[in-house]
Amino acid sequence: MNTMNYEYVVMLKRVPPGDRWDLDGQLYENLTDGLNALFLKTGNTTFLMNATEGTVAIQRETAEEPPAVTPVPIPLPKKYSLYDEN
Image (cartoon, helix red, strand yellow):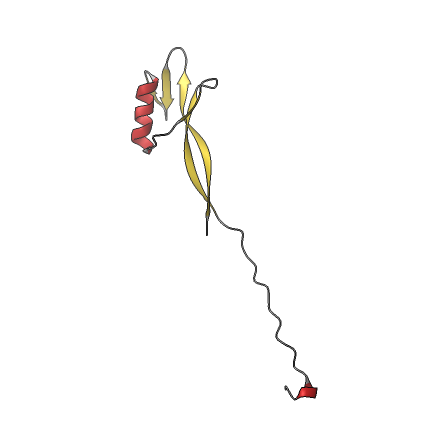
């Protein structure tokens, strides 16, 4: 069974001066237009904004494969000649 991890991926970056935002090389004139474009591209409705860095990120699920399990050989039961188990 895979476990789900989450990571934040920065999608929008502020381009000074003003309130311009870059999404994959496309420049949007304000944050609302940038968020709308991000929604249309990804379908995400939840955003993490970092005002200090001027970024907007989305949360993405990543599947993590479980570690490989090495089978341990089970020893066969011992047989004893004394009891005629041969």
